[in-house]
Image (tube, rainbow, N blue to C red; front, side, top):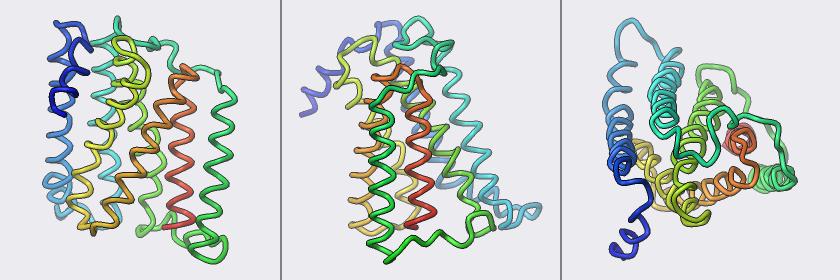
Length: 234
């Protein structure tokens, strides 16, 4: 299995860029592991901060780390991008985007009705307890799509075929979630559900990016999924 995966990865990026590509991801994964397991918990315990600000601090830290990586990827690999930086944000919203949006809305509302026996919005989305809405809307939908679809997938698509590129970027997307799972003390069933969800969402977001050649559709769909999951089902 390792040999097959290694063969797929072989020749993905030009030789002089391959170490930068994979090195950036490994470094990013390690930094995010440290942030999630050590740095974040240390910062929010400082006397100048209270629980009112802990989720905002997490949002700011994620923004700095993830946006910095996005800018670095787009600059370093500017000649190896499937969609050039200046064309990433455009007005192309293909029919596949609208179909997925409708499917997401129907599925999430049906899930909310079946799990809560009706549509019941979370009662504290903007309070301290529900302050993670900011992180869910922007921290996930915006930052994650920039790194993994506008960044890593955008580079991979110039070196290998569409579906292998989507598959590899989705696995990378899944692995970056593991630090959060480790510190969340989730049980086995929660691990399985979250892993399957991330794999499906990562694949769909990668696919819609290749169809639209526009980062907005994947950002919007990701935001819709996470926001409604939080508001309706959490």
